[in-house]
Image (tube, rainbow, N blue to C red; front, top):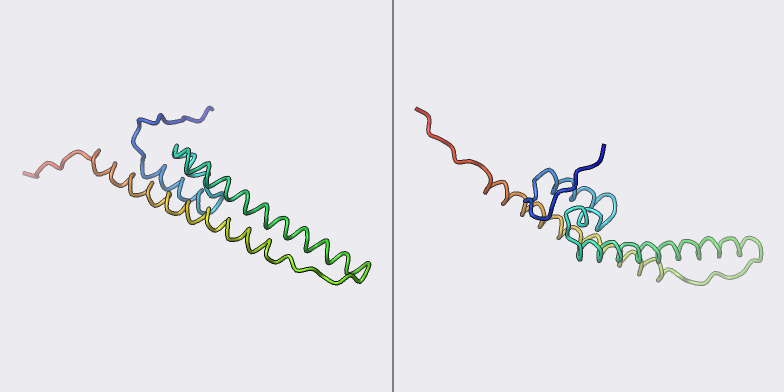
Length: 124
């Protein structure tokens, strides 16, 4: 069954905003923003998170390589901790940017719900 993609003109629902928030914060920063059609913010967040992850991965590979060299050749280790710290900082920047976007989505959805509710009729 094909997934229904909402048009850009439809107001953001609270369910969609909540799902985008969860994906942004607990899966991949920027993916939830893309789902909510926030293209520039989403692409920026995904790119930043991938760059940060790449730096952390580079640090990890370098660390494992140095450990292997120490075992086999007794080579002194080189400090590459800056690579992991830099990558973590970039990834955290993407995560915080995604948090700000997610909170904006939740606020927009709350405002949309307030506008779409019909007025209550008095009892009696």
